[in-house]
Amino acid sequence: MIRFDDVTKKYEGQKRAVFSHFNEKIEEGEFIALTGESGSGKTTLLKMLLRMTEPTQGRIYVKGEEIGRIRNRRVPHYRRGIGVVFQDFMLFQDRSVYDNLLLAYRITNGKERGSEKRIGDVLTFLGLDRLYKRMPSQISGGEQQKVCLARAILNHPRLLLADEPTGNLDPDASAEVMQLFELIHRQGVTVVLATHDIDTLHREAKSFRTVSLDRSARKGKA
Image (cartoon, rainbow, N blue to C red; front, top):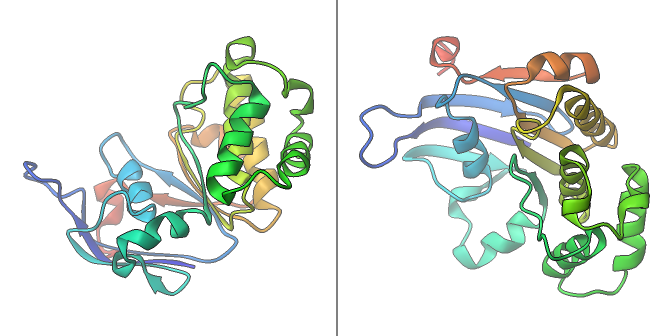
């Protein structure tokens, strides 16, 4: 499903490349845990998959398509097939849980038709149906992150990206969120999750593969 082919990424003004001749293949339906120290490139890798930044050299393929060749006007359409969960919740504080999800549905689908059923189905699937009228300030951090996860899967994505989704959560909330990622993965969704919280993932997920982005661990893989 995803292939990094000899990818090098160097930001302007930096002496050292984030990635140098990086190669990796992710099969459809895999659950990938990206690990590595701060600055090892976890967020950069996710941004490259979203076409928010591009490799300095090398190619990235998603479903057989080289995403660097996607025309700019097609990038929004490409991104509609990808769900994203950030560490910072990015919820609208002046909108209820339901209205946050409704806005996301309208943006990705261009319409409101069918939204009520889909939002209800997702909230029920994630055990959040009791929260739909609440404002973000009225629910816990763990619940807010679950709402973000609901927002990410509204459009039936086949690929789900997450950048340190438990970074701001306590241990109990982190465990619950990791359980939901495992649940979503069981539905056949490919998950690529950047995390420092590998111990929690080991406890809560059954079948994931670790890709270490520490430079020492990447030696010999290029």
